[in-house]
Every structure is written in C-alpha cells, then in structure tokens.
Length: 90
Image 1 (cartoon, rainbow, N blue to C red):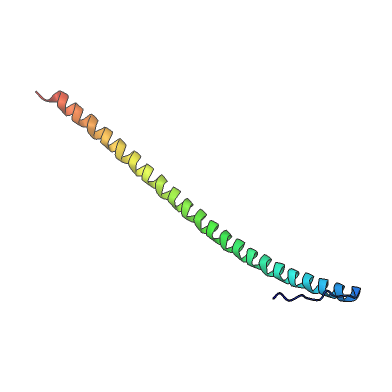
Image 2: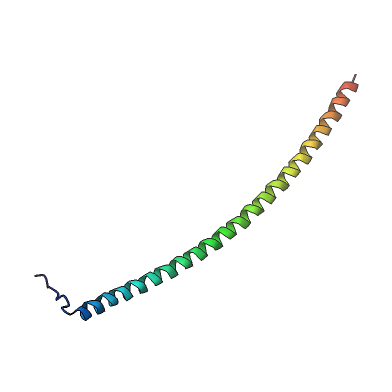
C-alpha cells in the first residue's frame, strides 16, 4: 500500500522544504557544471593534440610532394637523355 506523505502545514515549513530542495538542486547543478568543465578541458586537450597531428601530417605531405616533384624532374631529364640517345642511334 502506498504511503501518503504529510504536506507541511505552516508557511515556514513549506519554505524550509522548498529551500532544501533548491539547495539540493543547486548542489547537483554545481557538480554537473564541474563535470562539464572537466569534459570541455579534456576535449580542448584532444582538439589541441589533433591540431598538432594534422599540422605534422601536412608537413609530411608537403615534404612528400617536394620529393615527388624532384623525382618527376629527374625522370623527365632521364627521359630527355634517353630520347636524345635514341635519336643518335644508327
């Protein structure tokens, strides 16, 4: 069977009950905000680390592009040399 709780009769008692509920809610909210701040700080650290890794990756890609440009130029020179030799061959 359900138990019926008595509602405070006096205005002061109702006010005290409301203030206790408010204090409990504020405490819970403070804990939630603290947890949110902690999560945001962790997210900020993760994003910062990701940004660093992306910059490193971009640098590696740029280096690879330079190496490929050099290899392409060398291949073109070799191709031109081979074409010259082929034209000179009897």
